Image (cartoon, rainbow, N blue to C red; front, side, top):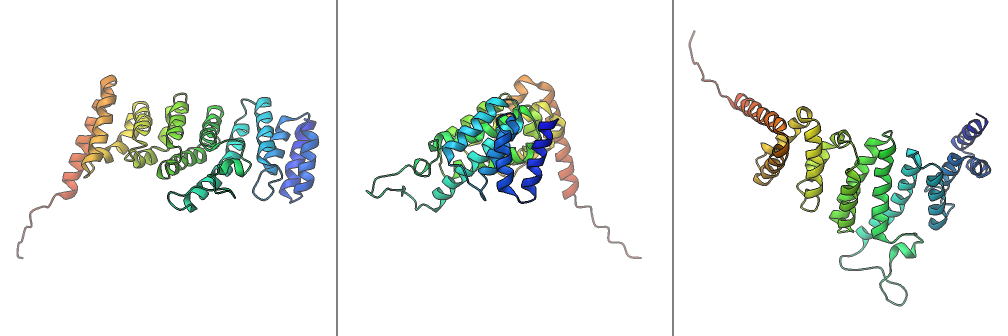
Length: 281
């Protein structure tokens, strides 16, 4: 109880703007309280502080995770820090002229991650950021909406910029195998809107089908937008997923056929043009 009170006192100091005092307080408390180490490291790596170089920050986050392996926040805040480093790389990539790579004073190609003090090369930075976010969801869902939206945005940017997209998609696919289907149902509209991307298609089709099998009556209505799309390729994607699911779950297939017919009837009703009865009084 006393250590918890000390932790809350540190939070209060930080909230009041006494950040230096708050950090010193957490450093003293960190020896006996792992959450204090995590909070202190988080505050010291925020954009407004940046008191720790990346290698030291990485060691601190790793220590906090070893002490609190099942604590959702330890994974989330570590991933958020790696995300800060990754955003710098993505911004650099966007600003960099096509076909140009950063070079050192001798004109040799330079690894930007290494030059900025990042403890990982870029492929690992992409992988560990996504892994940290999704591992946090294995331990809790307090930050579910933020995490999944950020994960989908990161994967999109990696594919758009051709920034180690294979590693990004492989990590999402790997982590998704142990995640609950309802988590992906929360972001089903985003998955459906991005499934047209040829790079994301295979991985995102798996996630969509996972949600459809678990929640056919809820996800079915969103699948109809693919099945009834005016775009032939979109229709084919929807039918391919429905056929794949139907091979193992005939009940889901019957549900989707029912929804398809209901939508046909609704379309007919919406476009029905009643005969004009021109009668004179």
